Figure 1 (tube, rainbow, N blue to C red):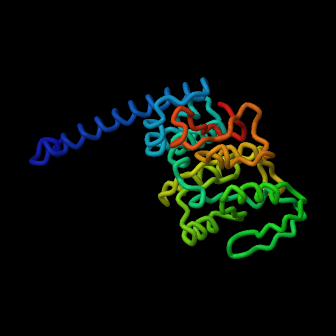
Figure 2: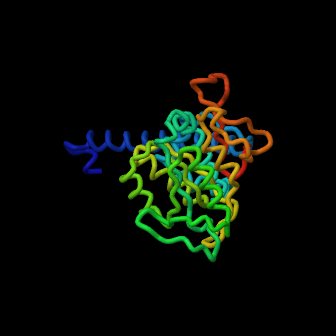
Figure 3: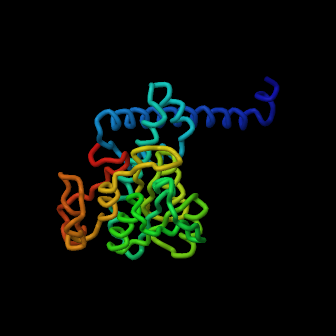
Length: 259
C-alpha cells in the first residue's frame, strides 16, 4: 500500500492497468482464434486465414493449451497448422519459376536395402527401383525441380544457402512438416508441405500424386507429362497469369486432396 501511495504510485497503477488490459486483449484474441480454428477444422474450410496464421504463431503456447482444453488432439492441431500454411503460401508459391524451386524428401521414404550414397548434398539416389523414390525423382526433375533426399534439417539449410531457391516443397511427418514451414518462413522462403501417409524412421509412405499436385502449382498444363497420375478429380495446375479464373489448390496438408 505504501508503494501505491508514494511518489511512484500513479506509475505503478498505470503499469498495472496496462498489464490487465493486455491480458484481457490476449485472452479475447485467443478466444477468437480458438473459435475460428475449431470451426475451420470441423467444417473443412479455413475462416479468416490471414488472421489465423499470425495469431496462432504469436500465441502458439497458449493456443496449444486451449486446444487441449476443448479436446483437440495434437495431431489434429498440427495438421491444421500445416493446412493453414499451405493455403496461405499457395499463390505465392505458384508465382515462383520452377527453376527457383526445390523439393526436399525425407530419407525414410527409401527401401531398407537402399544402396544410395550419402553425399554433402544428401543421399544420392541410384534409381535401383527398390522403392518409388527414384521414379518420383525422375518426374519431379523432369518438371524442372531440384530434388534432395535429406537426413535432417541441417542439410536443408545448407542446400538453401548453396542454391538459393525461392520456394520449396517439404515432405515428412506432421511435426517435421510444421517445423519445416516455420524454418522456411524464417529463411524468407515460400513453402508447401506434404505429410507422409505413414510415420516412422524406415520405409514410410507418401501419396506421390499429392506431391505432384503441389509441384504443379503455377505450371502450365503443357508441362504435365501425359502419363502422370494425379487424383481422379484433379485438373492439371495452371499458371495464374494464363488462367485467372482457376483457383490455386492448396489442400495438400494431410496426404490427400480435399479438406
